[in-house]
Length: 364
Image (tube, rainbow, N blue to C red; front, side, top):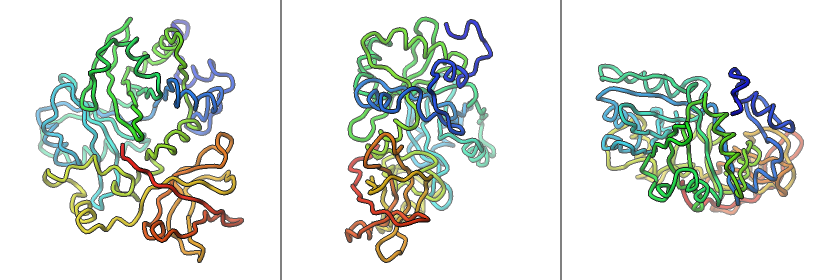
């Protein structure tokens, strides 16, 4: 095992040692060896994203389900053992605190949210616990989430955990113990029929587990993938991500996450705003894919405008210019500008650059 000779090796240290061509920027790894090869694994093989900074909260106590049912958007109180459910936490204006997944695991619950260095979700949950029998623990540093994406995932996971992978639907969580590794896994159905398989494993076991997966990959095209390749994949499939499209300036209607809201349950924080937007069709912006006429090498967000110069939207995600040509991205644009088929531009300090838009047809 990789860690036997260095118990203090961090996961990032491991990556730097194992992948000499790795490119790291601030807190993200852009690619490990080749963004193009990593992208091909996401499309046709098995791409593994290692999510080191997800918020993970453990909750115990008899009031957990009732409490989360009251303060988040989805129906939670009927969640059974070894089931999971996506739910959103919104502020009073109906804008995002976090997109989350709740797992019901034996004598505890795990609430998995966005990457969050400010511990915003943890603080938000605790803010509303008053007399409830609930204890919360921030266990974000104890676990790692691995996302497996690609056409070969089902076959590879069948080899790893057996035929039971075919019985796991989007409501279920499974626990597996294989060759000294214990982990939970579950599935999300993504845009355009892509399945995203998620594995929750102890951080101290992560390096050895990644080595184990690499050693048993056999004929499978399995690669760890960085953000350059993943950004292309999620742009192509219209997947919103924090903080680009999930933040406190954006509501779920705008980014196709309305299916993670129950309109049949009672009140939750932000409910009045969300219901009003739905009832009166007041959603003004829409998440779309954009194709950009010239290469941009500057950071998002960027303002989008019509020919007159009036602002009509914002470019939220931009692909790596070295990986795709022409460059693509995600943008939130006023519906009126889209319905009018207005000519749209990204505004930069030097000039305006023309863009084309295409709709995102399905929700995750």
